Amino acid sequence: MQGEAVLYEKVGGKVRCTACRRYCTLADGQIGFCGVRQNMGGRLYLNVYGRPMAVQIDPIEKKPVLHMHPGYRILSIGTAGCDFACQFCQNFELSQRRRPEGYDMGPEDIVSEAISYGCGGIAYTYNEPTIFSEFARDVGVLARREGLINIFVTNGFETRESVGFISGFLDAATVDFKGNASKEFYRKVMSVFDVDLIYDTIAEMLAGGIHVEVTDLVVPRIGDSLDEARAMLGRIMDICGPDVPISFLRFHPDYRLMSLPNTPVGVLERHAELAKSMGFHYVYIGNVPGHRLQNTYCPGCGSLLVERDMMRTLRIRLTPDSRCPDCGYSIPFVL
Image (cartoon, rainbow, N blue to C red; front, side, top):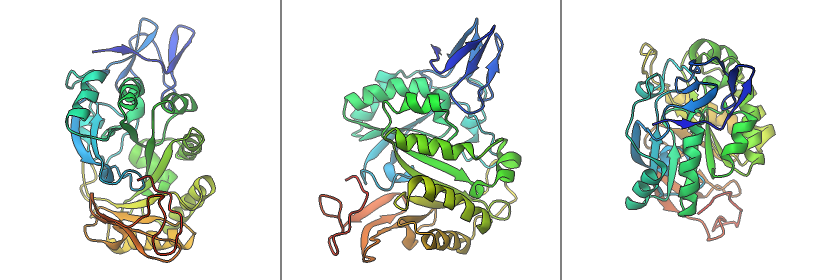
């Protein structure tokens, strides 16, 4: 199934894709870096429209979205293709695939599936959703009409055009940094030419009314510098302020980086301590079962407010207006 894209413009006899920051300019027949957006006769087509490769029900905490609708079941979908080439991608069978394969499921099918399984929302994830923005938009508009929320799990390489496009239906975005946003790491390990553009995307998402949470995959030996983490956190603080939820995620070896170990828990804890020392109120550690920093604590009095176990919310201690029941501190949390 194909659908003509919206995020493109004609440039002479070519088309210029405006979905991601690569801005691929394509001659007739050419396909963009992502492998799924193709110039056909002077028009740009999305070759994975209506063809998700992965359809699965996840808890919202898996995205992770930790400050919105705890306990929600989320129908997660992803397609082939990606605008990054991460050598550690755990979903490389999808993201690095350059054939438009998948299930035949249109927007109505996906929304009906979500409703039938009692899901509270739909997440566009597993590969980079920006590359299938038009498909996500058509799903998302129907989903919102049915009272479902919409979530992007994204690398943050959206353009201003695509942020404006998705803001019409998107409720939340988890923006995933890797390797402490090291420029060298992004170039050598992910084939990304400018990590700085991601900060602009975050600012544009916030301006568009999208709830943003941030993760950082801390990669041992090659992407775990505290100096680079400090620089990344400083820029996030300038854009988002101290209330943005930020999660430091444990790396595990996959795809072409099988020689590296899992991130030591102590390394993650030092990152979390750094973020707290810089004034962030809601700092988490992910992919470490049983760690206390899976939980949400009150910045005012330190009380445990939301208790989690990996991808499950076990207990919530918040008033109906999202305040700490012990000291009254207002928590940026959507119940």
